[in-house]
Image 1: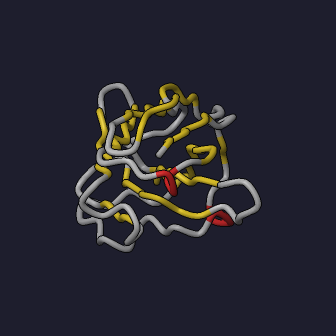
Image 2: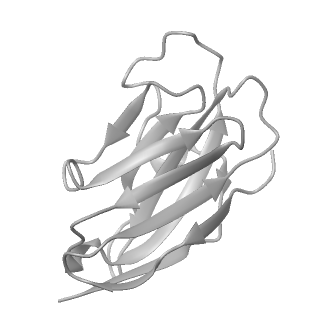
Length: 132
């Protein structure tokens, strides 16, 4: 698998919106998990949202539920993270990561874990800055 390629990010005022995209390649039958992580200065990296390559299985950290939406264009193997109602605490470097998983036609919500140690391929990261 190739390194995920991220795009998007930038600077916005609190309450604004931004969208991130991540394209992955090299997977068969959409058998992968894709996750967004973020790391703020001086803090540990944390999981934000995950999605199964076949769709229908997503996870969100409590801090972004109701504000962020992860979605997937299966044909393009590209995931998007729509971030609304952004807060200054959302500031950080956002990373896309992916890992192959066995194909399943019935993914469970817990299929794609949020632990960064589970992910094999990582993007370069894109900065998100939210000002108050």
